[in-house]
Each structure stands twice: as structure tokens, then as C-alpha cells.
Length: 166
Image 1 (cartoon, one colour):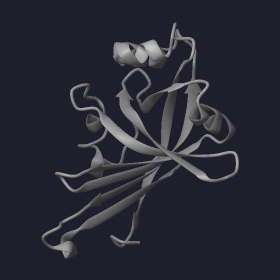
Image 2: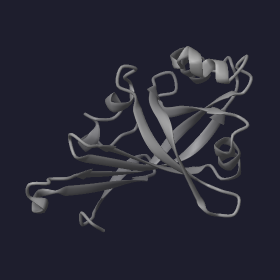
Image 3: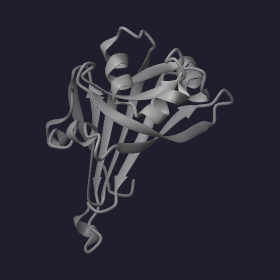
């Protein structure tokens, strides 16, 4: 997975634990152009070498990503005071023989699998990250807070300086 060196210690390791799943807020674009935000269980799937999440193929989220593959997400760790945001282009996969679909299905809890019936409504959203925004917050001394942003430029990450609140 292509990740800036400065956050490679966090990504993908934040996303590969079944014991401590990472739930992020993800925004798609509704048909009327409004943002549509919901919580998704983001996983790092080695078989896709990407961040992914499962999705019902008849859900508004799936339909919105079919119309506009761009997605934004945000995750916050309250104890460590870290915010991680990213933008990505989504690839939607339904082929049951695809390794990402197989792995994601195997990692999905049984009670959730039942919601998908025989699995024919099960899809996987594979994220090709185009930007990372990493914000470390120091509540005791806000002047020590730090924000770093990386934009994918071809195959390389270009860091942009940003103020913490802009």
C-alpha cells in the first residue's frame, strides 16, 4: 500500500485488527450533490493491498459510489488525540471469486453476513487513497499540535504545509 513514510507506522496497522476495528466516517455524494456521511468499518485487506469496507450493493452508499467514485473519510482517536482524514477513489467489487471479496466476507461477523442473505448483495469498496491529512493534537499546549498533509502526485507523495486549523 502506498503510504507516506511519516505515517507508515500507523497505516495500514490501524486498519488490520479484528479485536479493535476501525470505524471511520465516510462521505459520498448524494444524487442532489449534497454530502452523505455514515460510519463504515474500514479494514486493510492484504489481498487488495488497500483499505476497504464491505457494502450492501443495493444501499444508497453503493449507488452513490457508482455515480461518483470519489469518497472522503475521517477517523479520530480520542485517547491519542490523532485525527486522520483521507480522500480516495473507490473501486466497487462484487465478484465472489475476487480475493478482496472472499477475505472481507470471511472477516465479516456472522450476524452481519445474515443481513446479506446468501451473499449476493455483498460488495467491497476498495479505496485508492489520493490524499492523507494527519493531525496530532496537543491539548496541554496547542502550539505543539501538528498537521501534515500529503497529496498523491503520480506515484509519489507531495507534502503540503498546513496550519493546524486551516
